[in-house]
Image (cartoon, rainbow, N blue to C red; front, side, top):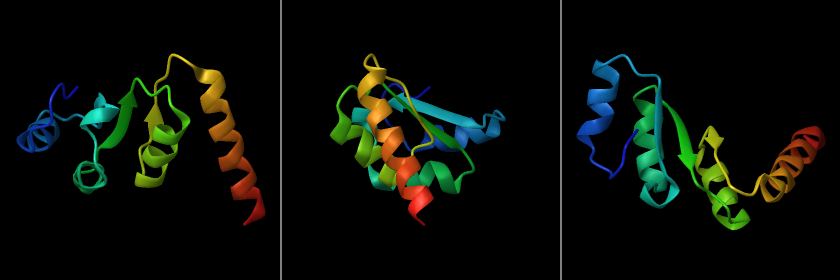
Length: 87
């Protein structure tokens, strides 16, 4: 878990054999998600209660989102499913 973003944490996580990097969504940027993905980490984010924030994280490639309001995020999941089916 990354409390505050520090680029060296990605390297340390890989050295320790971690496969997931978890942080609060406010600590993430598209570049940070990319760095974590390039290091082979799955990216999990918490606590995302705003649908627009969740969409942005999805677009950046975040693998999992934790929320206090899963009903809102269910709408996002529905969007993803409909988009996938349309392809």
